[in-house]
Amino acid sequence: MTVVEPRQWGTLRVPSGLLAVSGPDVLPGGGPAITVSVPPGKYVLEEARVRVGYDCEWSQAWVTHTDTTAVRLRVSETPAVSWEMGLGPDDAPRLLGENEIFGFCTDGATGCFADAGARESLHRLFERHLVHEEPGVGEDIPDSLYILRTQDEASGGELVAFATTGDGTHPVWVGRSADGDLAEVVVLVDGMPTMLQDAGADGAKTAPA
Image 1 (cartoon, rainbow, N blue to C red):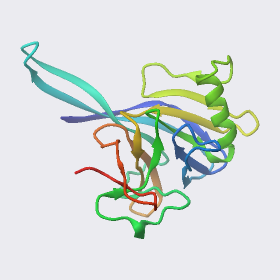
Image 2 (tube, rainbow, N blue to C red):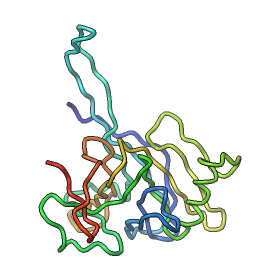
Image 3 (cartoon, rainbow, N blue to C red):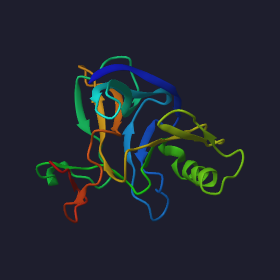
Image 4 (cartoon, rainbow, N blue to C red):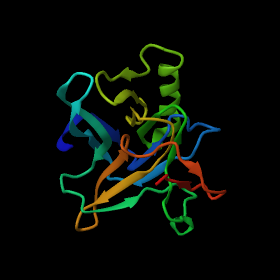
């Protein structure tokens, strides 16, 4: 397995200065979003990738392919040197036990980065585009784990949805530079157990060993 250069897939506008990371079903009845404060602006979206090679018994040949393992909102060109778990409004790290995480939940193998200031409007546009197939309310993104984009006309805030490898709970990782400044926000979409088990009423999840 070899890490290769990340692939850029456009940008995300966050004019409110608050990034939300969640599943797409976050309207009334859905789960809360994890939020991260960012300077208002437009940020690059990337896919982190690895190249895998193996001796394939079926084809009797050496096979290589490239997989996307994470999606990332890059806030700064300064590399991240430390990481912390993104938290929702009711998440308390002191309640976490060994191998437990907080994260956003999905039952549709989908997550999203969105401008929290227009979150409700953006998710309604997401539903109208994906479920009701209304023209002109969203944009499909081809050949990527990023699958569609919506934009709130009033604020300019955007939502970009991405596919995950399955349902369950996905942690959000916040990377910071050596000076403690925000550098990037990352969601692992592959190589991370997603069908996580409830660990109790506090909302934490247990990652299988």
